[in-house]
Length: 266
Image (cartoon, rainbow, N blue to C red):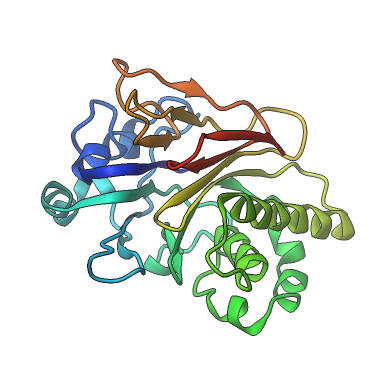
């Protein structure tokens, strides 16, 4: 069911998320603790920003398991960034193993990743695609429900010029709403889980969401450090020695390190 980690703050090595912690993302790829199936071996991806070179994020994605990829370990130990996304995949909807189906996904200056499943996606995919602009439609390169959620977000945010964190949150909220509307029109009753994380490299949005019924998948935040300069959101705590807060069901976290972290209901 996938595991993810995202960081925003002063520069860190990517290894700080991927390899170094006792319960790092690599560890979660073969021994996740808070899902029934502990293996997440259907590929991985990391995304990071190097604004000294360009605004668009860099990506490294592979279909091999994260625990078995030497290149990932080498890249992680020598690469620093102020904003890092890491994801290990357990294929579900759109389960084909390919780099295009691995998270995170990138468009313009945005990174996006998803933990969860839009049940009944095959019943709404065509209608969803028909409603997209050409730009949003053309950014879909794979087959996952996740990438289609990102396309819906792209259509909501594309006309903003340097959107605020509130505008990013509103755009992601509308993408979730559109998914639920299409499911209702198609008569899909199974609940969907959408733990989503989005960034423009300076601000971050995270959601823990389920349509109804049981809790969504696990999601935690490490609030800003005492100096107020960094933020972490993860599927599972990376270190037991750190203070983590469990995100409540159907909450959205809006992070702008120049302001306060804001929590909203979904």
